[in-house]
Image (cartoon, rainbow, N blue to C red; front, top):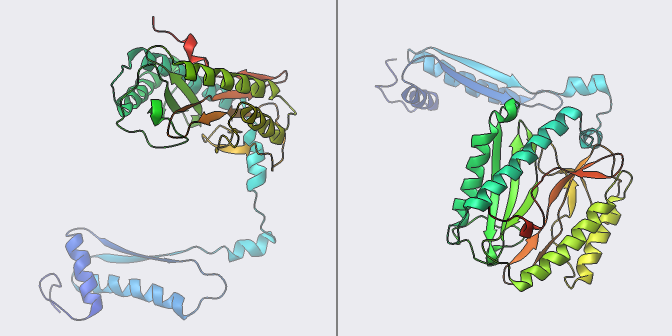
Length: 332
């Protein structure tokens, strides 16, 4: 038979081969197949192998070089050797929750960069800028300063969600809404340094904060400070959840927030352990925890405070220097 790129055929192998040749005009064509059998091989397994082999044969028949590679993903032999296969995820989560000194160093650097970027963005953001512009400003600063920071950082990236005024909500996308005067702009911040993350929420306000926001911030600072004071080696995760939600309810906002108020941070921005009153577990020295009470108003607006805390022998250490009472952060 002649060149399959020039002659047509009704045979399906020739048609598929012709398409492969057209897609790759030169060089060897590799046809791959794969299967993950469980138990005995059967006629269906043979069909998968023969189909791919036939296509490779069709390409060769058309005068081109081709080969067939078949992959087998078979864990049956492993199961026979190992006996019972147990999910080790809970053990791995427990081990990952306690950070090594090297991991803590990466997270300190990430939090340092997060604070520097927040200062830079607060000083340079202006009323009327788009939320997306301000987010881009923050992210670019982290990458620009972060790579090579203190001669210790190989990779630094930031990811943000930015909302201003009534755009503040539980979690929505950054938009093109303008930065508001006399109302907070909230930054949900994830900075990654060499594979280790922050999870922070920081705020800035161009102008003078309105009275209603002063009142909301005072309430959240009291709740936040009580929650962080409670957080130490041996403290109960369920009780932390109860405490923060009870104080928010007493402040006039029952049922808030809808998101978790505490979780682990490390190789991921959100990782175990999680604090929930229906759960279990205690804080342990060496954990890094994000604590994040928030209150959101119907129709838009509200506040969230969030920092990363290293649980220590004597209590905890706040890793990010940017103030949670953002009224203290003033332009120079």
